[in-house]
Structure formats: C-alpha cells, structure tokens
Image (cartoon, rainbow, N blue to C red; front, top):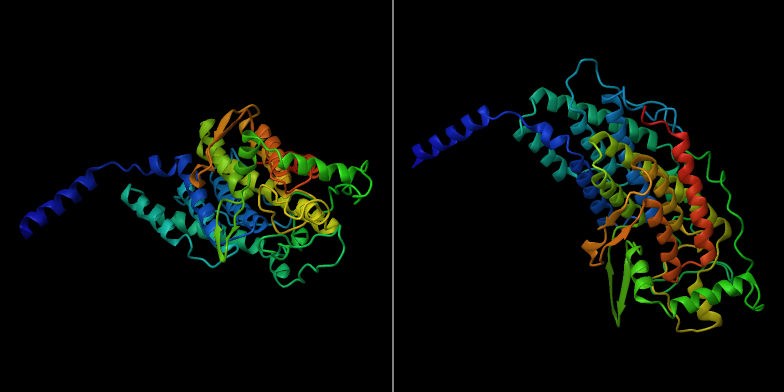
Length: 441
C-alpha cells in the first residue's frame, strides 16, 4: 500500500515537472483583478464601513494596483505621482528584476485595501491563495519573490501617502451637534443614529483643489406655509410620488438603495441586513464594463483606479455641502407637518439631505467609466442579484447615473431638486478627474 502511494506521488511530481508553466493564463486575466476587487468589496461590507469610508479603501487600493501596472508598462501608462494631491513618490522596481506585474498589482491592491482603514489580515486567506496559484501554475520562485517584494514596497508608499489625508484627525473630531431648528437635520427612524462622517469635507481631495472648489448653490429656502414656495412644492412632490410608486419606480429605488446597514425592526427584535454601499456598487459596475468591452488587464486596472478616484472626490464634494447646509430630511418634515405615520420607501440614511451623495458619486463614476470604456456601452448590471434584487439594463454608464438620481427621489429620501443639483455637480467632479489625470499615454 505504501509502495503504491509512493509511486502515485512520484507520478504526480513527474507530471507537474513536465507540465508547462501557465501562470500567465491565470494572473494576466482581467477577470481575476475584478474578482479581487469583489473580495475587498465583501470585506468592506462585512466591516460595516460607511460609504465615504468605503470609498477611501477603494481609492487607495486601486491606486496601488495601478501604480504597479504603470511601472511595469511605462510605455503605455503614466504614474499618478505629481498628479494627485500630496502624492510625491512611489516605490520603483529594481532594474532587470523579474517581476510579474499583474500578480504584483493584485497583491498591492489587497495589501492597501485591507490596511488603509482596518488592521491587516482581512484578506490574508485570499492573498495566500494567490501565492499558491502562482506556485501551482509554474511561476518561477524568484519571480514570485520579486513580485511580492515589489507589491509590498508600492503598498508601503501608498500607505505613507494616505496618512496625510486628514482621516485620522477626523476620527477624534467633534460630533455633529443637534439643535432645535426645524430646517436643520435631526436623526431619523428607526435607529435615530448620529450623523455619519460630519468632517468628511475636511479630507484631502485627490484631484479637486479642495472640497470648496465646486460650491453648490443653497437649497430652496425652508417654507411650508406658502403653497407656492419652491420648498413646499418639493415636499408635496416627493410625498405624492412615494405614495403612488409603480412597480418600475419601486424597482429603481430598491436597485440603487445600496444601504450597507439597513436596520430592520419587528416588534422588539432588531437586526441589520447588509448590501454593497454606493461606491461598492459602482466598483462592481467597473468589472461589468471591463468584461462587456473585453478590456485587457491594464485597461481594467486603469478603469478601477480612475473610477475610485472620482468616487472619492465625489464624496468629499457632497459631504462638504451636507454639513454646510445641514438640511432636514423629507421624512422629518412630512411627519411633523403633514402625516405623522408617513415613511419613505427606503430607509433614510443618517446624514443631512442636501446634497445627495449617491447622485453625486454616481455621476462622477459615470464620467470616469465613459472616458475608459466609451459612451453608449450597453450593459446589464447584475450587482444586486446576490441580494435578491433583479438585474437592470442600461444604454450607457451615464444612463445608469441618471437613473440613480431618480432612485433617491423615488425612495423618498432626497428632494427632487437635491437629486438634480447633485447629479450636475457630480458630473463636474467626474469631468475634472477625466480632464486632469493623464494615465494612458
């Protein structure tokens, strides 16, 4: 028996030694990069990160992956050093050192993605599996070592840069103060949570000069006495719309809900259900776009980086406005003045109403995606199927962003005016990323 087992092991070893290395078929597949982004997406969802914080994970991780590819293919791609605020240097590969840049990009993405906000180790099992794939599929030992060493060096560069974005300082900044003014935001049912990230507008931007570069106009003046006022009409418009949603409008609202922590209350029982947050949803769309257009590995990595940067700046732009104007949610106004039992279709998130974060970042992401994959790329978004929500199809990325703006209105959590203005300024943010960044040569 032992002799048979020994002969079997010898046969396996001989077969493996004769087999040609095929690691490039594995690691140069853009689908593997998208699956890796999905792994980070799942970790972010599992750790209950708010949408702005999630965007920070995606941005720094995606830039790390991109910088590896830019170093590996300098004739095709340009580093973002000197193009992003405060980004002054990044590790360079040693001359004539055998590196598989695709493998290194995966590792750099994971190392930064798991360490930028939470302790390292959340993606260890996944990165260990990537290492084993490299070994199993014939990547030379020296190349594995060189690739892993370079990935770590780039990750350390990105992490060092990230520490200057003011994130840590905002962890101990004062909480949002609640004041008794009807126009001013107050916590909403069912959780009555405190305001999320009131100092996010102080985070260092990546492409915008700062959060004040694109200053949105004030929202309509609070006035519920004059039935001809802009504000009164906005309140009635959202109330009447939500009270008579049809099946299509309901699906649109549910599809773009992207509430990472929905609090469910049933009697004395409370539990949370999780979904990908708005930036996580758009990071998923990047992968769908890459697959639809048959993008190669480097184009896919570039698309994730540019989109993540647009999402990051979009959140800062929107959050700066939110905590400048501090406006109350539709739910609060309608409950107090029109119907105490009224509830929006979607659960109201815990931060001020104006401007709409999802509308802003979606428009910004659509600009970035269009610049990479092109306009009029028709696709079916399967991102929400895992959460039991059927797919939706779009004529283009901009078409999807337009629908996102409608979704927050149909959901009853943003006034129509807020959705329109936010979409407009999100487009401006995304356009600035597209115009200012030189990535592909």
